[in-house]
Amino acid sequence: MRPLEGIRVVEVAQFTFVPAAGAVLADWGAEIIKVEHATTGDGQRGLRQLGSIVLDGERNPAFEHPNRGKRSVGVDIGTPEGLEIVMKLVDEADVFLTNFLPAARQRLRIDVEHVQARNSNCVYARGSAVGDDGEERENGGYDMTGYWCRAGSSASITPSGSPAPIPPPPAYGDTIGGMTIAGGIAAALLGRARTGHAPEIDVSLLSTGMWAMALPISVTLDNGQPWVAPPAGISAAPTNPLAGIYETSDGRHLSILGLQGFRYWADFCAHIDRPDLVTDERFADAELMAVNAPAATAIMREVFATRTLAEWTERFVDLESPWAPIQNTAEVVADRQARANGYIATVHADDGDTFELVSNPVRFDRTSPELKAAPAFAVDTDDVLGELGYEMDAILELKVAGVIT
Image: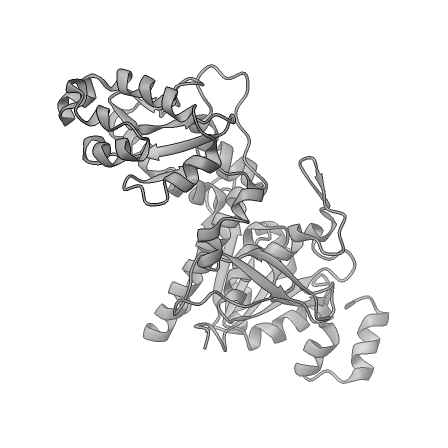
């Protein structure tokens, strides 16, 4: 049994940040009813280009990722009849999940006071760009703005002297933020079970981005100095040659991160076929290694330049020091360790088709979730309204009136 089976979530949200939370909850067994606008649907459905990549296949991974496993209904919440449909869903819901801005929530009457007046047992979860308090609470945003730029990641990762800041990959902060919301909802459901109180949850892209940067921000809080990335090309720690990035013979790179450098030195030297370095007096103990780190780093650069990344990857399978090849996304999906742990999951569509997506990172009982495809737009409208007690004649009248799809 998946841990959230029997939990019902009403999601009134679009794009990635908050819907990604619904996708995680669906992975964990919850029933997610995604309410989309009766005419336009979720704007994410039309997103067919990410960077230079055009998504022209039958399935849209930009939509599948944050919407797998849900049911879709098309409802115009701006009409009294549409709002009543949503509130009937709320009557039976454990969680209401939204990323609508405050003014829109009030205008549509789906803010926390309206939802919990209808069902006081319903956890209210809200995602925003920069938080629901303060003078900017009405401002929208995306992960590029709220998570990556404003919360410090962009400035902190861009090498000193670079002509422009480094942008994030698509939905980078959105996906992490969605996982954060899902964790908050799980905690809220546990708290409700223990106390009987259904809390209100706030998560923003800004708060999630600051949490991701919490350690360097904490350093700044302590000494007032901003975290600054080293200049481009500075890839190894000044006092530890086993903490750096090195280039291989085919122009690729790998990262070595033995924070206790001398502890791993003998094993590392054996793996690079340089046992002579173990007895080199310059690296005879931890203090000498720190003093002579630049010399060791220069030797390591020469050694790494003798083999390809693939060759070093095979050679370092049992290396004691933590390390990793610097992989592109095509290499990640073929990563044997990722596959062995089920981090790429098979998705099953109703038409019998199967494809793959990244699983959420939490496994229960050593099992990765079996995912279902994202729903076609409004495909479940008739069934969901029927479950709410609407007769077919009433459903047809609502369709003619434009209240539902």
